[in-house]
Length: 347
Image (cartoon, rainbow, N blue to C red; front, side, top):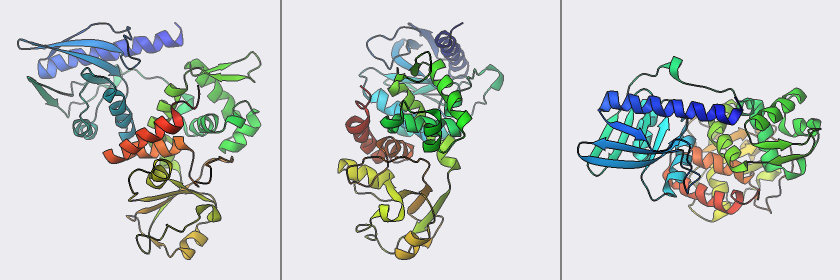
C-alpha cells in the first residue's frame, strides 16, 4: 500500500469512527457524501450529511489531528474561505480544545463522541468523553521531531541552502549531520519533496501543506524546547529606539507582525536571540519576571535572512507565533503576514 493511500485509509477510519461516536453520544445520524472527493475546494476531505429531527444539515469536513491553538487557528482560517458550513473531524478533542473550538466558532466531532455543532435548528455540545487510544491511527513523521523541524525551517526560509550539502544544512539548522538525510526521506515519503536520483536536486511538491504542518507542530515540538526567559520593561516605550541586532537579536511575534503589516500595535515584546542576554538586559533595564511582557527566546537557526532592514525573524516564524496566540486579533495579523509574505513565496 503506498503512503498516500495509507493516509487516506486512516482518514476514512477516523471519519467513520467519529460518525459512529456522535450517533452514540448525541443521537445525531450522519452519512458520508464522498470521503475521497475534493470538490471545488482543496479544503474538503468529505461531504457529510446529518439528519436531526426533520431537518438535514450538510457540511464540508476537514479530517485532521488537533493538539494546539495553532491547529485551530489554521483550521479557522481555512473554514472562513468556504461559504458552506464546515466541520472538523478529529481523532480526539480535549475539553480545553473543545472550549477553544466553541470560542473560535469551529464545529467538530471526534472518535470519542465529543462534538460541537451549531446551526439553525441544531445545537450540540458534548465534551469530556475519553479517548480510546487503541482505535486512533497514528503515523510517525521524522520531519516533525525537534531536529526535523529545524531542518524544515531552513528549507522553507533559506532558499540559498535549499540545494546545499547535508553538512551545510545541518550547520544552519544546528542539528547532527545524520538527521538531515532522515528528514529528507520523511519529506519525500509524505509527498512534500521530490529528489533526483543522487538526492542533490530538490523540489517542493506541496510547500503549503508542509508550512501548515510546521506551523501546527512548532509550539509543541520545537518552541517548547527552546530556552526562554521573561522580563518586565522599564516603561511602555522602552523598545521604540531599540536596535535588536546590536545584541544578536531579532523581533518576533506581535512586534514583527506590526512591522511587516502596519496592523495592530503590539502588546507583548518577543525577541529571538543568540548568545548571552546580559547586555540587552542591563542596557535596557529589564527585570526578570516570569509573567512579564518581554520574552526572549533562543534563536535556533544560523543563516542570514534578508528582512530589508526591519530586523525581524523570517515571516514563517512570525506567522507561527501569531497563530499560536490565543488572541483572535493576532490571527488576523497572521493572515495578512501569510498572504503578503508566504502564500506565493514558493510558486
